[in-house]
Image (cartoon, rainbow over all chains, first blue to last red):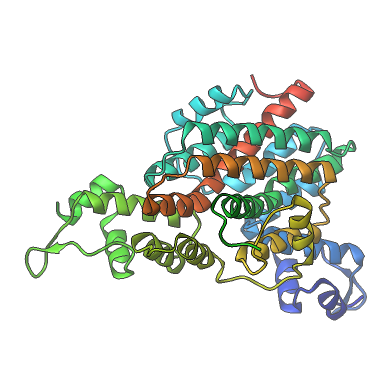
Length: 202
Length: 202
């Protein structure tokens, strides 16, 4: 198909497609003349994926390029590839005191590489809560730790077996499941408060 | 204290403090001459809160202003105030098909106002997953729903009783706990995969 048809089917404008092509987020089409290229169904899928990563996923173009690069050529080492994709999302990290994060990980009893970028992510989240004067009660933090463990076990149990598919699942899950969980938590809160206070809803 | 001392204690530069003052995110100090103002501890707290909302919270200046406005003057109706603060975070929403979101809410059995902006948030999160060709297995979605319910119940059980404190807790929780949960989920995944595959960690 031509670029106009690709735009129609993907819901991404022609100008934006050209931008993604220039930025290397979407592979070039097959040239059929010096000014025209043909695109296939894989391009439609790729455009939707790019839109999801840049939109709901909240990635920058540079971050999305790194994540797609890992998904496209994961290599043999799943752990290394996942680490590379995840570290692509942390390139703008400030340094903060990581000791509260390490204490929390110890409390959860989790086996974590202390150098992994998620420790910094946790440290920054805890610092932001502290900055806002927001104290998470122990009972609530315990619920967060338990829920995180349960969710991760379920995700891992349903991970695809084929390594490339598993990697894609893990990377996209890390990026795109977060908005889903955020929405679910807010809705569950609305339900819980409607039941407790008998207001709103219905 | 003077603005230079305020900058030192809050960790926010003088130029940024002046910007926040102009944007109405931080209340003006008390003028002691035509060119000097005095600031108090409340300003230090406020600056840290603003930094958390704009940084980890990911809010725009306009969104942060609305959220702070609700926290500062919540009025008598907690539900209305919480709704106002939450809708401040959705002002850039695209419209998407909401039927998958309503189906999922029905499956969870939650009591939700169908007009609440979180339904749109859920619909956009589901659309992004669909765009990325990412199918959440039923068993994983069930784990997400159960975890969201458990987390919300724990949060509600520990909600402060004083209405102003409760509102602040709910609003900041919605914004600032999300990065915390995202970090915890990624760490729990790392722990779960280390245990399953016996790699990484330690």
